[in-house]
Image 1 (cartoon, rainbow, N blue to C red):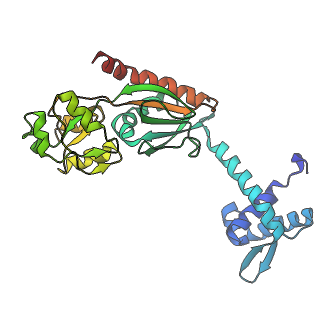
Image 2 (tube, rainbow, N blue to C red):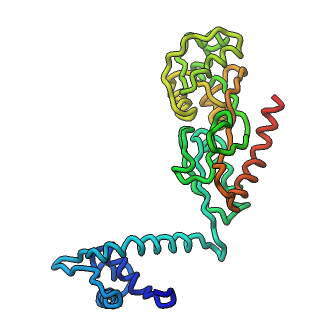
Image 3 (cartoon, rainbow, N blue to C red):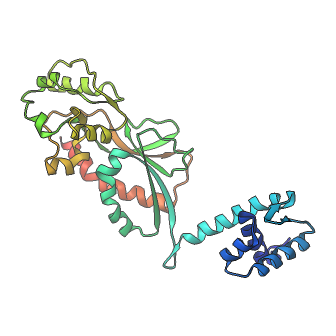
Length: 297
């Protein structure tokens, strides 16, 4: 069947009726009469030479022919709707899917997104957070921002900036921490990276105790526990500037240790879109002052 002769109204009537299994509900959705929907479906059946519905006393049931036709129509209409949704103000918006480690999203990225939106209004940004474990291909992401050494299989990685770790705790605990060795008497909250506390104690010139505190899968949840007085966190102060500024949490020692950086990553096999190029250029520029500050330190 050639495209100019596609019976679009009849196909819409069938697809809506098949989803609802009701001509009446389909008519409400399409803002036409029930008789009009029934007539369109009947004309489509005559054109195809096939019965698409079994008319039952209390509704409809799809025939085998109807079940074969429905998935293709549903997918086609969904795709058309998705493209039409991209138009705004006479311009096409481009969807950009980004997965971000939660600590970076809340501590740095989200407050800067209005700046990105203002500079690139055509980008429809979709943001999801994770605990640094992400599968770009399986999750349909254009980019993933994660913490580590930049070495991920089949992935390109561009360094944003380092995230030095330091001791963070509530003021009540900070008052009793005069020297790093005073931490030996505290509950030390841990991440799944077992080398962080030993590295920090080595940088502070103090023997590391046996760390037995609770283990967290992100710095954000670890610091939330610290805010509740559950122990002392080892986390990047840069990501918790608001809490430090408000005084709800303190950094009792200036000693820091750098065990990794935040990276912008994407699949080597991906073809950069205009939205990807725009976001990459923007975030690298926005990260530059923080990268320079880390290099100066």
